Image 1: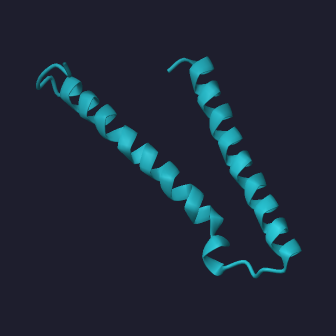
Image 2: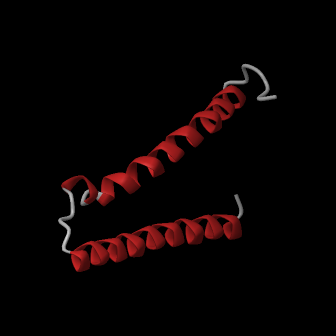
Length: 79
């Protein structure tokens, strides 16, 4: 990846994170305004954000490392 592509991925990732953070804050304000109690399972937002990100990273590393290993050890071409 070029620097500009990496920068675009970082900007998009930060935007998605901030969007989810602000939507969660707004959702909590609406629940408090209605007098409803916020359930404990909805308070664990870090876990809800971290697991999908980790899944994407781990899922993406698999094919990348497969290709790297095959080319590095000269076992066969990635194609």
